[in-house]
Length: 230
Ligand SMILES: *Cc1c(COP(=O)(O)O)cnc(C)c1O
Image: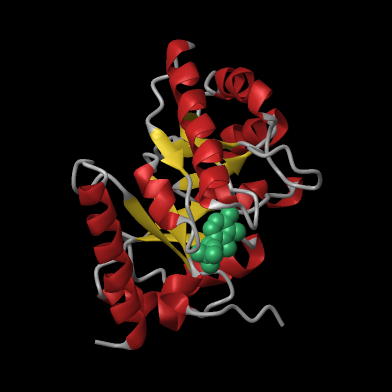
């Protein structure tokens, strides 16, 4: 086993252990391996260990990797970064999931550009859960209304909600933010949207996220190592 494969297995074990401790159903949390800044060869290694779900932030970089990895047909691509208007077409044509829909306009473009022969794009509404300035995502109070509008689009399926918790939060603060996300998902269900996804949790807060009911955790550095953005 390579070190990346070892890391991947260790994260899976940690998720399983936390699900059990929280009395959750085993296998209820999907691990999305966040491969931004890392080469396609690293993705192959983790793929060989059994991972199929990969998350990427930078559309151009990701697009290159989809070409390099075109021989892996069952890979599931999760876009987890901000999408500029001039990049929505790439996403509509190649992504399976988008976790970061924070504006109706982005969703409208994605729906229009989604090829009709493909299944609907699976999306989460990104919530700026701690109301941080300069952070992407819709305000918590506006999340349900946005989701209801996005759900009307033809080629999109609203699956749930996503957030990035405030950096430096204590365990208690994380529980409060993730708990609010869970409440918003219930609100969404009560508004008639059959959404089931809570994409909360990254390397640093994965354990608390799983305790709080995460269905998807997006884990980068705990698998691939430290990122070098140069
Ligand atoms: C980079 C990133 C992650 C992964 O972060 P790690 O701390 O490396 O696990 C998860 N979600 C989003 C939105 C990201 O940008």
